Amino acid sequence: MLKKHWAALLSVGALMLAGPGHAQQKAEDDVIRIGVLTDMSGQFSHEAGEGSVTAVRMAIEDFGGKVLNKKIDLVVADHQNKNEVAVATARSWYDQQKVVMIQNLINSAVALAVANVAREKDRIAIVNGSGSSRLTNDACTPNSIHYSYDTYALAKGTGSALVKQGFDTWFFLTADYAFGHALESDTAAFVKASNGKVVGTVRYPIDASDHSSFLLQAQASNAKVVAIAGSGTTFINAVKSAREFGLTPKQTLAGMLVWITDVKSMGLQQAQGLVLTNAFYWDRDEATRAWSKRFFEKMKRMPHMGDAGDYSSTMHYLKAIAAAGTTDAAAVMKKMKETPINDFFAKGGKIREDGRMIHDMYVYQVKTPQESKYDWDFYKQLAVIPAAEAYRPLAESACPLVKK
Image 1: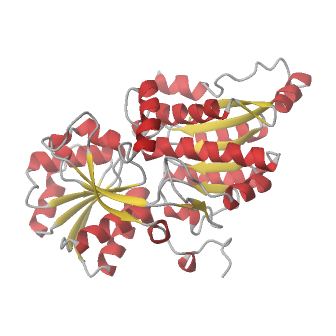
Image 2 (image 1 turned 30 degrees about the vertical axis):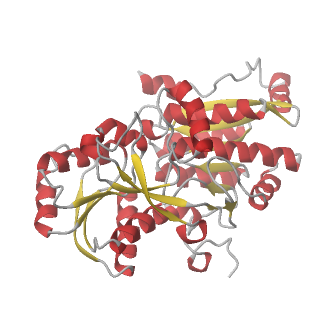
Image 3 (image 1 turned 60 degrees about the vertical axis):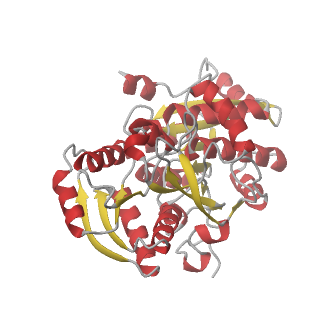
């Protein structure tokens, strides 16, 4: 029922259009429309969904609800983790509803597909939910921005940090889908580059409820690190299985993509000790705490890097429209790329020519129940990865927009 509700809800607070003629033209003249295309009801809904909508809406409200003397309108749809639904919605939004920017795009296959539609329609797509580093590598476009994180940064942070601490043998427990494969591949490369060794890999179906046979292989490997490459409920179920199986504390668990909502879902008793890399933590400093408190009042949970990135990138986009004096995609992208990002999400952030927003990344470890002093007090910081080091160097990029 919920899926049908969100699939049908292609407009939130949109103008009622009386017909295809004058009313449609008036809507286009009077409104600047932004879309949130996300997973509202599936396995990634806790990593995007209503939190993404709330964050974008907060940015619109904080900006004042208008830009270029036009009302900012928000439309929302559930892509249901189906490429065909996402592409059809994006085309409809760009063509019929004159949406100027689509936000969030969790699910890497969806993000890659919609980025291509944005290029075709000469509109803008900003990705905060999905992690595939292809978005700013071989699949980059002049119309898309990858803002919060990517698999390259996650892999470099967690892989390099643990090997430096002596955790130099790795076994991968990988969810058998494209994103899991990308996480494994990127992380393995950094482990080997740091003189670590990958001693084994097993791939499990994303709908697996019994992980015992896979965990037996991980245990038998005697690897110091068992890295779980997956996200959403797939990742949560694998961690729970590892705890029940008794895999740790003999072996360290590394989560290659961990959302703070995952930790809340599992509880510190099961999540404790997990090492992870992240772009944002609500309790990092006064600025993150101030914004997160506002988000919590609306969502009754603390924000994660996707939520914070949705807000930050939407605000940056609206400021670029105001500075450019137009919604023209090329003009707005130019302003976004030449203007540094300095807010609670990132200090000295910059959008490169390949569409990658570079900013510091952070390596954390999940606290024990005894170390946690209050609700959502989950992480202790292990390392900071400077923006210049966190992402794929342009010299190694396959993006055709990068000048060689």
